[in-house]
Length: 223
Image 1 (cartoon, rainbow, N blue to C red):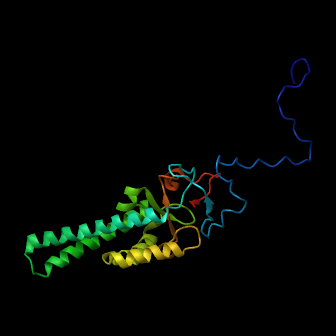
Image 2 (tube, rainbow, N blue to C red; image 1 turned 120 degrees about the vertical axis):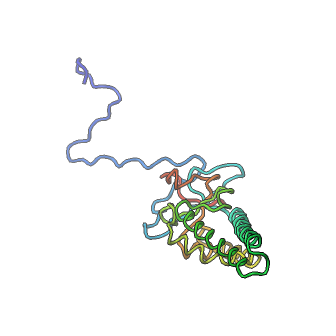
Image 3 (cartoon, helix red, strand yellow; image 1 turned 180 degrees about the horizontal axis):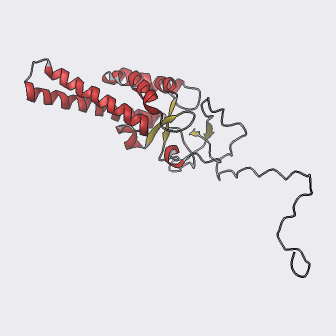
């Protein structure tokens, strides 16, 4: 109240004693996208629900976005080429060091491939990146927390898919079929389900590891 006895302008009146205050307003919806419905995020022990959105080409989403099958297959092909390249380097080094026709040559090649696999598991567990995923802007995260999956889950994913990378055609068909058959909206392959992981697109959506998950922009998939 001013010195003249008039009340200050634009100051909300306090509620009467014993009358509960009005509840806080819900967060505003993100322009162009539906606000998350109550209960859209499932309990912490379950995977996050996925909102289906229309996302025109070239437009980005202000929240975590499930990677589409095309980008995932592209990243898989790049990772397979990288694995083959590591094996080829090992074989060439073996031939140069021991000559062709000795058992040390394949041992060196596949030994180097095994070392590459171990490093890849550690990197995926800590960052969610592989060679292909880094190039295409994808990241592997936990389906509940949207944080890095850790060594154990990365090892499960790797053991289920990495040995089959030498059989490119069959594995590619298997990856495509499992992504197509997934009805959860999370585009999960069998290896994702086993490791409780999803792959997000950090170029068309936000990076949940770096940016967190905005309250008004739930996990979504473009349709």
